[in-house]
Every structure is written in C-alpha cells, then in structure tokens.
Length: 107
Length: 118
Image 1 (cartoon, chains in turn brown, cyan):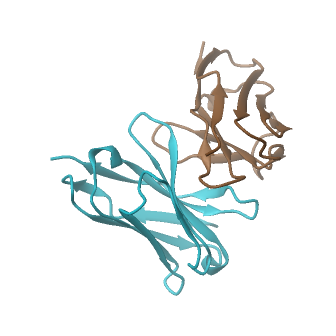
Image 2 (image 1 turned 45 degrees about the vertical axis):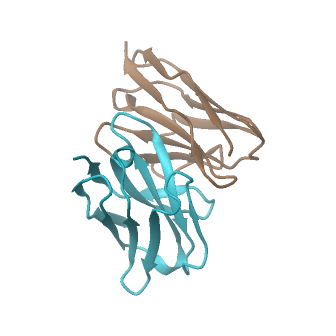
C-alpha cells in the first residue's frame, strides 16, 4: 500500500497568513493526488485534483503543486472560512489512501 | 446538481449486520464508478470499497474484506454496502462518493453514522 505522510498534523495561523501543507507519498504517484477540506460535522469537499487543478467554485487563494512523491497545498491568504481540516488523497493505486489530516486553527 | 444521500446507519451489536444505501441524483449514475469511505469518531478518512460502473470490478480494504459487500442497482440509481460481522472498530460515519474522471472522489454524500456497541 502507498503511505501518505501529511505534515504538519496541526497548525495555528491568523487571518491573512500564507499556509502550506505537505504530503509525501511512499512511492511515486505521478500527479494522482487530490486535496480535500472538511469542516466539523460535514463531508469532505474536493479543493484540488490532479495535484494542481482547482476544483470549480473553489477560491483562487487555494493552490496545489507537486508530482511524484512530494505535494503541497497552499492557501495564499487565510480567510475565516478556511479554518478546517485538510486531507490529501492518492488515487494512483488501490487501496486509495489519505494523509492523516492537517487541522488549521485560529491563532 | 449532483446529490448523494446515504441512509441505513444506526446502532448495532457486535457481530450484527447492517445495510447502507446511497441514493444518487443529478448525474448519469450508470456512467460512474462509486466508493464507500468511512471516518471513525475524531479520526481520519479511510477508503472502504469501490465498484465499477457496471459492477463487474470491485475492491475492498483489507480491514473489511470478507465481511462487507458493495453492490449497485443502476436502474434505481443506488449504491449499497452490506456490512456483516460488525466490530466495534467499524464504528464510523460512512460516506458514499462518486469517483470522478481522474479517479478521485469528486462528490460526497453527507454521511450516515454506524455505531457498533453492545
């Protein structure tokens, strides 16, 4: 199975801050990676697909980059509605595996 | 718009069974692969099972293999998960999700809670 190591597991940030979350795959997954946002009591919502493509309707302050084994989700200017938990997902091979999650909290 | 609505969750004793359903609308259900994903209380996301558009190809996570069965009825636009021999560690919110053209999950239902406890 491909292991996805996500870091950090949590972070505290202020509105307007630039935030970066990283996922590392245990083997190469090309660009078969998505990023998801989950708010308490809600289903995850896809933000990024194919490592760097923005889901329709998602604000442009979200961006993704990377290929192979190293991937990054960046929020360029954190907004109040962005406080949530973020997960990466590799779908290069079964079983599809998620990172452990990054909880973004208000500083 | 795409809608996925799960049902069938509830409280069940260890060793018991439960059948989850997911009603799909807003897209041509028979064109898409579908998956079940779960989330234990306070924990991360775990992929559970996948079924191809025709139902001919199915995968399971090792943690549920031999106990859970995924199926679909394209005429009814519905996805199912039959869960047998349930264990306490199966307690989770179960989400159905559409597998998008890229192979990841582009739409999710709101989830249904399964609690396995005596």
